[in-house]
Length: 198
Image (cartoon, rainbow, N blue to C red; front, side, top):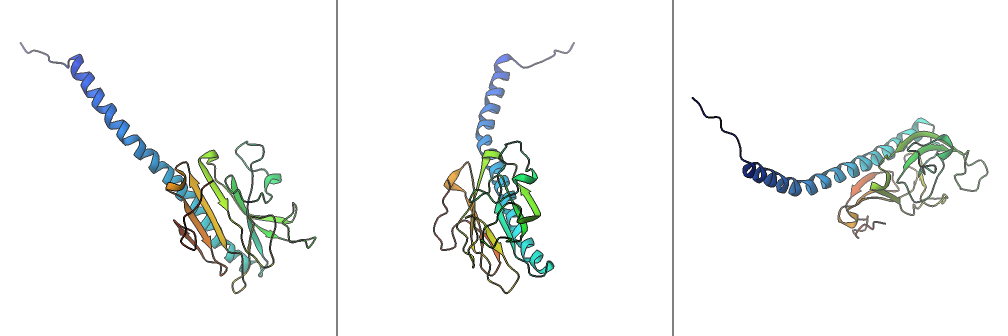
């Protein structure tokens, strides 16, 4: 006759306690990994948008394009056509790359003057803050936080877009756009100073 052996309640409790300790140690690492993946996805989309912008200006006969942040004003998680207007420094909800026709000649991207070429929505809600700096352009373009992109060989906007997650100043990334139209990523500002998170 064989004896059937099982686990005692004390043995099961010890195994569960050890599993709980291991899970509590691993969970912060998984959280940081998830935050880094979200941040990297947004940074890569910014780079792709800016690279596309230069080729689009050539394709469209040298017409200038603008890239600017947009706001999901109604908070429904999608960008309606009337929300595709330049919203200033905050690019957290997403951004639009479009052909700009300054119909009234005021150097401001007004509603109706922007023909969207590409729209990107971050879909990250409050988990990421995407903030544009003061882009220098000649002539200046309003509203602030709007980037003017011209064809190759012509001076375009230059500046920095900072992407921060809930870790704040510990792990921000920047997309730096030069006046020559080159985009690159960095863990610091163009001058080497630390990035600032809101």
